[in-house]
Amino acid sequence: LCISPYMAAYFEQQYGVPGTVLYPCRGKDVISSDAPPEPRASSVFTIGYAGSVHAEVLPALRALVKVLETIGGRLLIFSQLSPSNANALGLLMPHVNLEPAIPSVTLIQRLRSESDALFLAMADVGLNSRICFPSKLVDYTATGLPIIVSAPEESSPAYWVREHPSAAMLVGAGDTESLRRAVVALANDPERRRALGVQAQQIGNAQFAYMRARDTFFAAVTERTCYR
Image (cartoon, rainbow, N blue to C red; front, side, top):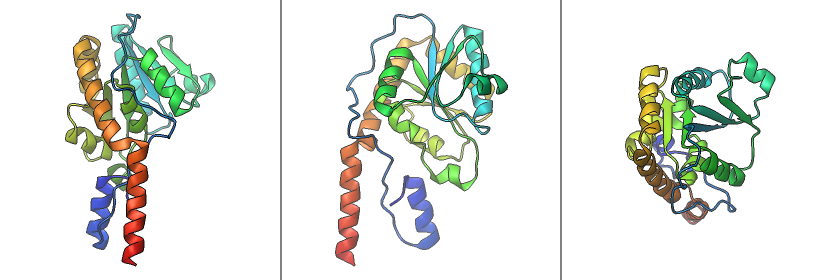
């Protein structure tokens, strides 16, 4: 059982045995809407980020903060990051809002109601970044919001976006100009935000639904048990 098709391909190349792709999945209690959220009343363009804030993703977050500052936007971070640590990392700024980490069900609703777009960052950490899969895409795609992915060219989130170009915007890791263009494009184009969000939601519902993961797991276990 492999967490991504990229892991399955790598292991088959290494060991000559095909694997079954079992993506990370949503919880049983997560019900994804069939439509993107209604436009927010606030005129402040807001990008949401959920997940750990560590050394590998810090440069991307700092770059995003600078871009949002230039357009009067806001970054909403759901993480275990304390104000003191945020200050030490250069993220404690007037246009950065810190929120505690919360369960997926609540997170998805908060992101839908308080964000216009979402941000996912991955650094180059060798083989792991190429074959793993960012579980945050599971929650992000449930929101119906557009996603900006900042990642190395040879990484699993970059592979995913290139396979589904209508579902997210890809910028290279460290490419601040491409990041700026992506943010500005989304901030100025509500229809593009909606189109990306609809596609992300449809693809996420197809790939990451709890029932799909359950059925994939049972089928893989049954097949291997019968074979043995």
